[in-house]
Image 1 (cartoon, helix red, strand yellow):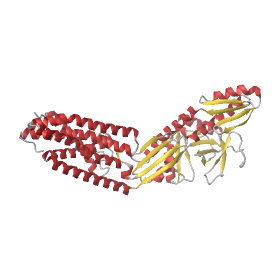
Image 2: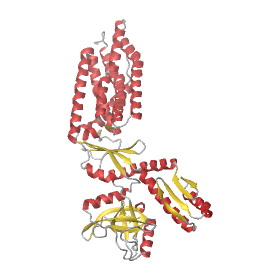
Image 3: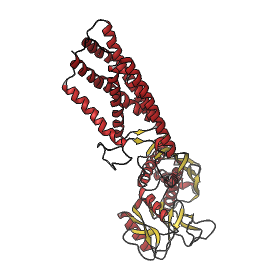
Image 4: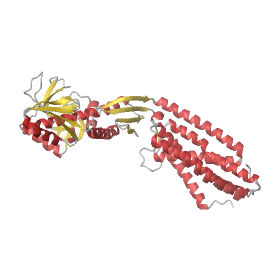
Length: 516
């Protein structure tokens, strides 16, 4: 007998009702439910960049700059160590991708080589006569680049989150690139500026004895200034007394009726800041941001408490942006925009409308075919098809999978595939009827014998969708997600929903013939 137990009916009805509950919010106004916790009904399908507009950025992490900074640090360490060991040297500096110097006295060569090898474990030391070079190994360069990309992704994510951009896509692409998609943003230029600014903050004591122009003393560097009220550049100590890593908070505020940035150090930074300011009262110190002096106040007294303010010719918006950047942290290396695309909301709306038309046309054609070809059973399959689309929308809402234009194409394809299993079953039932079986036996045999073919055909397509998701990126993944969800829901609606309708009809009417 064509049996369909009560527990199966309850399961089918429960799943379909859940699909309705989770997909219903998509018929409401956007954000009608506000912020809803994950798994709770009320979330809408997350639209991709091509459907709601926004910006697409492909960024390159300048790991070469970071390698050079590490080499400069090695250079400073080598200079200090050689001086402490009283070893004479000449020509200490950077040559291409290595630190090079020559030892004056041959007797000091072995001691200088030992000092060079003790500077850092990840560097290769070579000796050529009296000349010693220190270069990073290939593994060190790769590790620096990998860490730079990972840190940059995290910092970019923090910066974008603070701007209020919802559901951004930030992921690594290749070895040294970051893909950023920002759906529905109002000011893409501001976000791009926030992403691209390194925001490397450091505090340096100013060398007041250095000449205003010309060469700088060893251990110092000349830094340009953006402060209109001071000189065009400052000579500061190369070694920073503090860096932005010691900051724990930065907020925009007002002082003397002008916007300023208020900052606060952690315990270690606050103690060090107090010691340095106590020892250098009357001496200016420079606040350097991304290689430019933004302020160079004179230390009037010891600054206790671990807090202070950054003044300058700032607007309110600049203060807010600078505070955001300092809170999020500095990028380890500069980012370069390799590719930028902007999708307007109007184009996204057109894409959604085109997708709706394609889905409706496809569904009407499929429904017409099923009803003409299979009559009452075609109506059963059509109702199941409606639940199939409801389940797809519900699943996308729950998973918060981003729906893109290729994703809509996956849904349209699923509409056609959703009735494929029903076609296999109904044709099998026809064959059984032609072989002289009774209606109930034909239905039972048709479902049981067609099931293997249905599972095999859908599994092969599901595997293809999984591989597309694993190996693809961006729009390809969107297509793979909707295709995979559609395959699973179509199998459920064909094997369970349509069969439930057929079983209830067969048990109630006890037909002598099947209208198929």
